[in-house]
Image: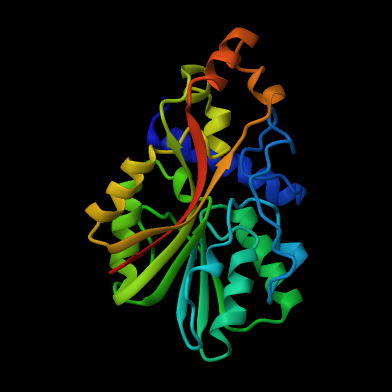
Length: 262
């Protein structure tokens, strides 16, 4: 496995490419995994939805379970082109404000263009690292994220930062990719799969442990959905025999939407 800085650079380069190309790709996408591994869910019926901001990069709809109220200050981690921010904005109303945090210049630029299209004044896109967020403590009512924290090398540090920036009694709701069982080494060691949210994923229990270790209480999985990687993708990493063994191993890749309270 590559070190933290190398993994971040892989993610930054890949998602920068997606932003520049405006390709509808999906978590799991890469030059090798193009358009066939889409974990995303249809957002088009959600208030605030803007198709220009939807690059198909999520694996859930965290705003469905985030209990965002009028006047809330909301932070979206890994905000990309702004899709979840604009949906959250429809829930906070003019009384609240939404911030999007992303460490990719191209995504920040695209999100700000979409902000102009939407005509929203109470949303702000900020460049920064989830492991070292550029926000003061006790600032947000709600933190959301969609298929991004699995790309962060240090999950415990990420959740500690979420805890820090939330107000007392604030809460988070994130959709993410987790594992049940050990992935084959061919998948686990593929940097391209890391950028596609799979090889960087934690075991489900380890993920939940990182949340509780950060101090969160009343942690609950609101949605659990199994993800199947296409055989055509996996055969680029392993033989047919290895693929069959993997399929029969009971190992599962899941999209979960989880909440926790400070």
